[in-house]
Image 1 (cartoon, one colour):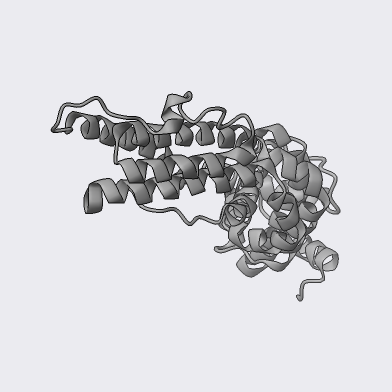
Image 2: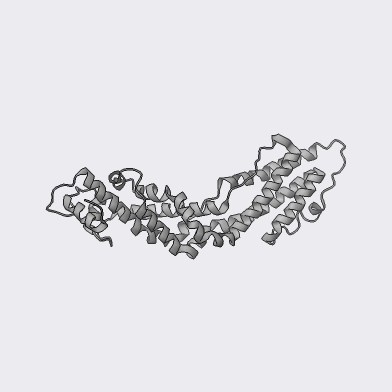
Length: 304
């Protein structure tokens, strides 16, 4: 038992105890989780797979365009194809959109395999320019905005109810509390994060690279439709990458909080909390008492 010498808590009292201690658990996991910043990642958006697939589609279209030439004449490549396949397209990220637009215009005008290959090449390079900054965007944002992230997490934990009974969540699985409140709550916390992080993301390399890559991709889709019509298996992409990052940072943090939660559940004794005996009792799964309930009510201000 947590507090000894008392009768067992009622089911309602157990729910109050577990709801409070579940929130205590999540709160003490925040800082250790954020200290593991290298493990927190924002996954590549699903639309990114479509961008990569577009490269193969464009190359296939280019091969068929070359094979379908009826007159058998050697094809005249657009000027940029003659100068090294878009020249120094990706030497600077700021060149992506303008040079890709030139390739798109050339392909649309010529309808040639060389033009389509030029677009595929520009898209491949823009993909590479996006992947590197995306791999470390969570680390960059947490380093710059940790105080705001902690504030949002604590407010969310304090103001949000668990989606099911807290007694069951405290029994497990080992990351049940984190999954229920933090991972599921990521969309709401991401929206609260906008004012803090929007300008940082706007200026970031990853957002610049995404916008340029999607510009190339959407231009490529438009060219592909001119060549293949409705048979083109690609569609334009309108994903707001900043909103995606804002939400998925909290998903990643929630997953890491779940790792810390599991570690504490395995050894819940002597934690730096206001009622360590009650905390340990909850996560050891021992019988909770009326005295435990009284202690939690006094700590949290919950009504009897």
